[in-house]
Figure 1: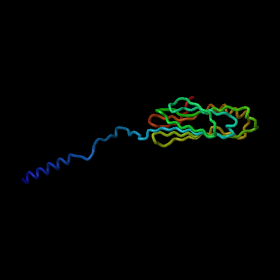
Figure 2: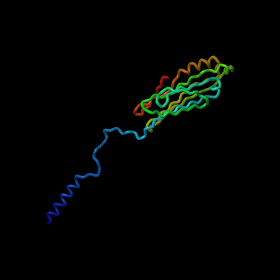
Figure 3: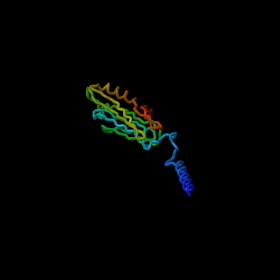
Figure 4: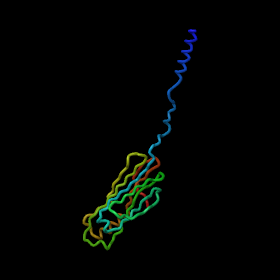
Length: 173
């Protein structure tokens, strides 16, 4: 009887030796997927009222699907938030300035405009960039018209890759 009891204990201990509490399968081969799948691109431009008084400003930008969109700037702050529908995507903006020649009646003009754009993907660190769109101090009517024509050629933007990597890259319109 003692042998049977001793043998039973030994079998039980051997069985417990080969059991484990959890899976030994390590899934380190699979890349960890980000939990937050949101992507956001925010463009905010600040225009002096003096600038809006002497020109019309049109914002050309890329919408959530990456297509060209356009709207007139009607206030000193213009903001557009884009939540792309798929990646990769090229986001950005181009402002076109058209002089209101009948409003250019002063000898000198002073004004400024600044753009801040922020891209964020998958809950990561936002990538921000600020650009001076235009800054004038004591400029003549002729110089203002020349500046509007030149500045209408500048485009600002960011490219967001499928893995959420954001790089500064201007789109074409």
